[in-house]
Image 1: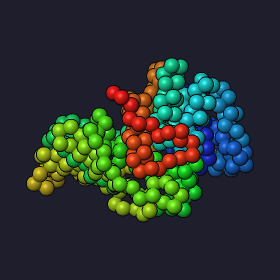
Image 2: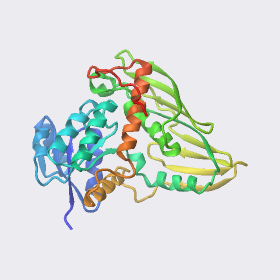
Image 3: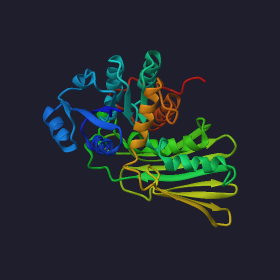
Image 4: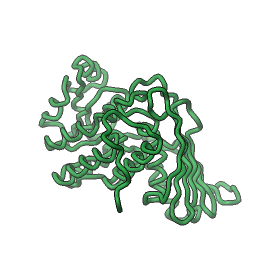
Length: 335
């Protein structure tokens, strides 16, 4: 069986992690790299043993041997580049956040469905075996009825020009905040009944730190803290009426522990030794969907991608965080 050939659009840090992962993943190969700078593409290709190097994204899209394109450029560019891929008939996996707002997100997802060409969001937490195992435990009622989530996620990203730039859809929300929001959605399902939040903006106008409180039907809540100013513990607790779960490192769990209400440890899981980086699972799922003719992954459906982007729109609107490409941050659509 020939290796599944992946083209990478953008030659930054995450693209490098993906290329290294694909080099170690059976039946996959990082076949092509594209950058607006051919010298950067060549340097990246040499480092990760990539056969095809392109100095434009259009060349990558037009390569007939590329079976999936992974977009690893700034958030502001995702929608236009995903559209380019779909118009050329290329399946595409878009790094989170899928875009900078729900309007462009819906446009691309609708195109994917109309053309029946795969398009997915590379929200890797949705694909990680650790979270699949955790969700199975919750479905079995190990801590009873789940009622609350508390978590934090942050890193010191103040020296990262991309994250500081409104022109590139920067800020903590789209780079980091989408992780705890996705975790809440994985646990509690439908959109929250109400959201309250506070945000500290940086001098450039992007969000630097936020606290988000989500309320769901049935007296369920989620408290989410995100910052790009420093690194907190990056852990989570999930509470139920019969116990609770601790998660170490929510965006790539090292371990999770299940306790009964008497604080007795009843189950512990640790990250699989066989895991490469964690990014491999989204590529395996994308390939499987493409092979059977699906236009999305069940782990991160189009509906979920759009739901998360609508939540982010609402938060940005509340905070007054705007990007130059915003026409108007859309209000929540009528149900």
